[in-house]
Image (cartoon, rainbow, N blue to C red):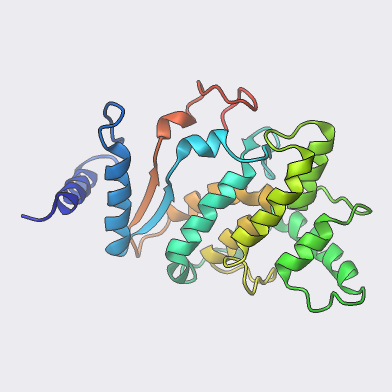
Length: 258
C-alpha cells in the first residue's frame, strides 16, 4: 500500500474518471479538509498537473485593502489585490509550464485599453531626465504618484481615486501608499522583464493581471476559461473554503457576490 496521501489522491483521481469533474470535500470543522486539499494539490503538482490553487477562499472575499469593479464588467466587484495574490501563487508554482501554453491574441482584446493608456503615459514620463532606464515596476510607481495625470486604468491610480471618494473597502488613504509599495515587492519576481507587447502565452496573460491590479479579477476569470481548454496536461482548480464564495456571504464591503 502507498502512503495516506497517495491513497487519498488515488481515490480522488478514480472518482474524477467516473463522475463529473467537480469534487467538494465535506466534513465538520477541524477534521482536516484543508490538509487533505493542500496535500492533493502538492501531490498533483509533483506528478505534473497544472494546479490553480486558492488556499484561502475566505480571504479572497474578506481580506485585502481595496475592493473595486471588474475592469471588464463594472457591475461585478473584484477583490483586486487578493486576485493578484492568487495569480502570483499560480505563476510561482508553474511559470515554466505556463510559458508553453499558447493562447489566441484576441484573448487580450478586453485589456487593450488599459495597456494603451499605460503605454502612452509611460512614453511621456520616460522622456523626462533619469527615467529612460526605469523597469516596469519603477515606472508603474512613478505613474501612480503623478497627481497631474490620474488615469482611471492605472491600478494604483484607480485605488487612489476610490480612496478619495470614500469607496475604498479596507485601507485608508494613509495606508494605501504603504500597501502599494508592498505590492511592488510582492510583484517583483513575477514582473521581471515585463514586456507589454508580448501576448502569446498563458504566462503573458497572468503577468498582465499582476501588473495591473484592476485587471486581476478579469484575468483570473479568463485564465480559468483557458484552463478548461488545456488538453495536453491534466488541470486542477482547487479552492479551499469554497463555501465562503456563496451569495449568502456577509461581506463587509457589499452584499454582492465577489
